[in-house]
Image (tube, rainbow, N blue to C red; front, side, top):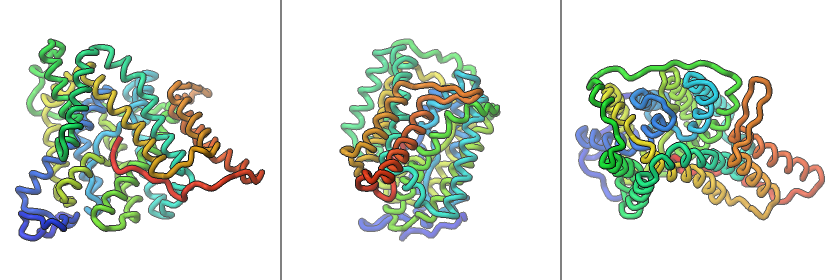
Length: 433
């Protein structure tokens, strides 16, 4: 588990070579690359707890622990970092407003357990059924509607609180993305947060009292889940997104390393689910495999899992400083407003990319209705309560996408009016929303 073969002389990589998962560079270089992974994941990972009200230090701690757990379960064969999942923001927010943080943590934990069980199922029967149940038009619609459902809160809860700071934060992210390539371009959100935060400080919007009062060393703030089964339907659609991200990331890593890693999807799903459930058990945010770190691997051509062990350990060490968590908590609504304008839109774009990559034919009525109705339900954020169960726009939109697609196809087959079938499997993108 902890033995890596030295790549070449440990210091250089030939132009046509890569450092494979079972290899490593010299330890000083490996530690440096691990630090790059921490920088790449940090901007997105701490934003989820800040947006949802979860403790950032706890999220950072279980992000690191979850990454190490992932590496153990996948036997060091799939290099990946587990950061905070944006797909959970809407159900966490809705559950917290309807009940409490504990209820939201309970929903996250149950979702994690279900994802882990799904991973065990995939290990037994493979991934073919996923494409049949959720072809590109369905999977893309579900991913897109989660992003679009969040859009109204980006303005009302954050952007409107400080429009100038939010606008300048947004512009800094756009400029960074346009001007830089490589690592700087991939951490444009983090750079945007730094710029926006600096503007907030200059405008007198930041209260540093909690930072001064926080200790340098100490355990993070822990919370425990409570279980409200009536809120569970809000979380179930997120499994689709996690499934899409996970399969997409494994496929991407396999392509870049010249290996077929399809047989590892079951393990990666199980690892992701267990890491999410473990994090929720102590108050941390849910996790998912991170495309930002895949981007770092692509840029450096270093796929060594040793670098991810370094990144996970560094995240754990950072989480042991309450002062770091206090600084993160001082990020103002204006900064978050500018950031969420970008991030929520990108979640929707990931779904649209699934349509393009999956070559979805929108001249077909079944595809038009599947996507159109599902997106409208999510944007309108329809609510439906049955007894103690609450269904929000995301849950209803997901059910609509599945029911409309399979229902219309069933009717088409029965009446002989169905046209060309969908591709056999959904095509998923290679990065986190």
